[in-house]
Amino acid sequence: MERIDVKIKRVRDGGDITLPRYMTSHSAGMDLYADVVGEIILQPMERRLIPTGIAIALPDGFEAQIRPRSGLAINHGITLLNSPGTIDADYRGEISVIMINLGDKPFIVKKGDRVGQMVINKIYHAAWDTVGL
Image (cartoon, rainbow, N blue to C red; front, side, top):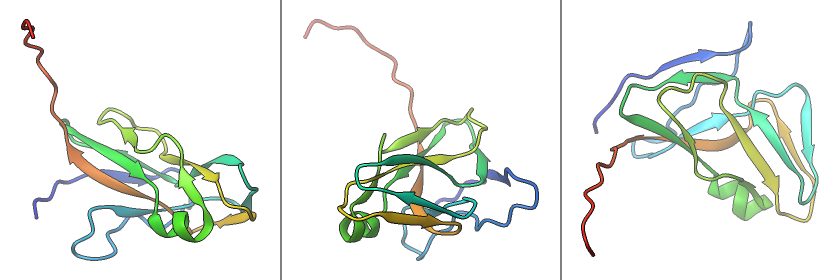
């Protein structure tokens, strides 16, 4: 499997949040972890921005896609809006996920909970070739 180096930093002083990681050697996505203070309670049909406590610097020619976790979706009705979200190579801000509770019970997000997945992809820019179709 091909690898690339990606710079990462914790965005808060004293931040101890788990860095994204692959759970198995064949995982396509790295788990992202919530970096929240206390608990966030998502009521049914409520959406909230959940910080991950990290920022990354991708090399030119790459993007990161932020995707929901299937276990949260099937077990709790939790998914991510704007999915997949795209992190461009020039974005340097904190990565956050927009969670929504589509279930029928409140859902609690705590620090360190796995809240999404991040997949790194190579990108291509299109050069249009106008033709009569």
